[in-house]
Image (tube, rainbow, N blue to C red; front, side, top):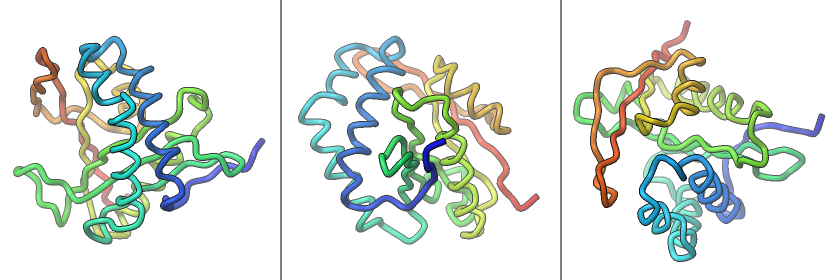
Amino acid sequence: MADVGVRPARRADAAAVADIQVRTWRHAYRDLLPAEALGQVTGPAATEAWRDRWAEAATAPPSPRHRLLVAVASDLVVGFAAHAPAEDADHDPAAAAELIALLVDPLHARAGHGSRLLAATVDLLREDGFTTLITWAFEDDEVTRAFLGSAGWAPDGTARTLDMGEPVRQIRLHTDIGVP
């Protein structure tokens, strides 16, 4: 098997991270999001903006508790995860973190990269003293919900509706990451 692992992202990874985000969204969300909205967040201008945003996340995060990790296979970036203290008003940002993104390139799916990213994220968050991890998922995203469900995540009863030209519902998932 090729060398695989997870490491902190570097500025040089920003283009790969943005490209993975765009490819994954186009693949995973093509039936979940309105075509026009998906086109706007995955078009050339958006891709360039994502590259800048991920470069900043890798080199100048807002705090030491904001992190961007990449999954690598034979030195190729194949996925990424980003996390930060939770910003939802009903969570204490000292104890709850948010998994902002966890995406694996569709060309490298089902090879354990998502699980490695999730495990590395939880390890870092535990070191930082977090005990709860939350994330938002599209309600109809059965793949993400099944993946996280298999790792012990569950809906917490909170939902929101995004205006993407038409309403798109998200649900919040959570898991306890306190030391077992």
